[in-house]
Length: 280
Image 1 (tube, rainbow, N blue to C red):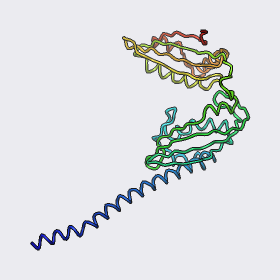
Image 2 (image 1 turned 30 degrees about the vertical axis):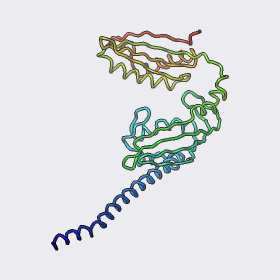
Image 3 (image 1 turned 60 degrees about the horizontal axis):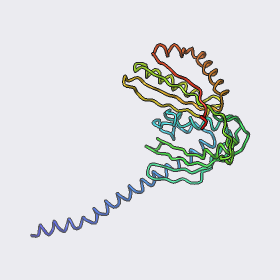
């Protein structure tokens, strides 16, 4: 009986210690997570202060993971800087001012306003010399102390309005003679991979040309597994399309690429047209 009492006493005596030890472990884990979140916020603070504002891109390898994928599919630092570089080139005095940083788990949300003067062309917008400021929000996801994913949302409407591309009252804006350049391709199954690779190159190139507005691609497969592929490129006017055709042909010549030859070799047929808005 004494042995039983002794065992119960020892277990009872140890319970507070066990409970305290477990509580301390949970507390330590909580402190560790908070420390991680604060560290992630400090990294974003450095990103804006020393990388973005001071244009010191040498620091990015220590901030951005090699696994990070940019909006155009590029990996690592290249993918991260791809959308930023043209903006800095067009607005060389650009500065980001953080208004808030919020950390939750492995994510940090940054709210900011950037200020800059457009002294160079940005996409299809010529230099305006205008000083503007734009609000935005960015969400950064961390893994192992580096940014593995990012998403940026900005006031695009305010951006275009500030540069004078769009009027302040859009409802009063005149409708421009925009045109749609539409291609419809029928691609045999064996040539789909090569065809799509070339189309991707072309779509990327036309986005750099003056007068380009937007483009989209649609596809489906017929009963014989042929690809039916449609591209729609929107341009400011017919003159922009004519110039784009010349630029594309010049690029083909520079590359030594034979587009008609590839189409014939792959057995691709095409229907092409320049469309304007239909009258009701």
